[in-house]
Image 1 (cartoon, one colour):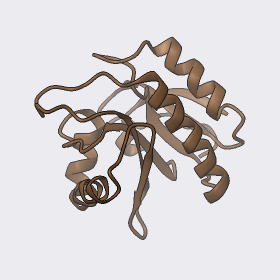
Image 2 (cartoon, one colour):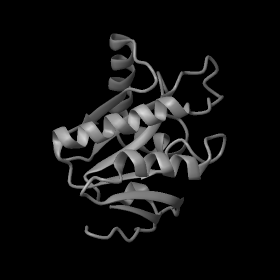
Image 3 (cartoon, helix red, strand yellow):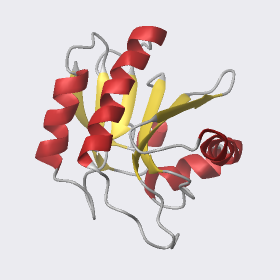
Image 4 (cartoon, helix red, strand yellow):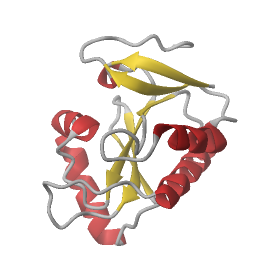
Length: 162
């Protein structure tokens, strides 16, 4: 079941946090920055993985440490040569990532997921279109999926079922 919630995603009690990133993303803005600050080793591991696998948009990369949340990084766009600019997410890559996330759920059986409006918002894709993709690819999962539609720093969101 997909729920739209408002609050601080970093305070989510979900088992998995999902974010959209670019290939070789420096993770210096938005949710990525917050996760980078909390888990700096994640970013180092991500960059190493990108180099080793020649990562491409449409793939996902999962990171987790024992006793900490699992972070699923959806590669929604190419890297930009200028790290101060952000590229617009690619619809086809996002849809592939959501399909891969569905498969990952069926493989690993996570109990819940939390994510922002992946690829939507400032300089991004239109939220209604992204929401349709999310419903199409994730709507049949029998776990709570929390989409943080409004970021409210320091405020715990109401996450039904948790």
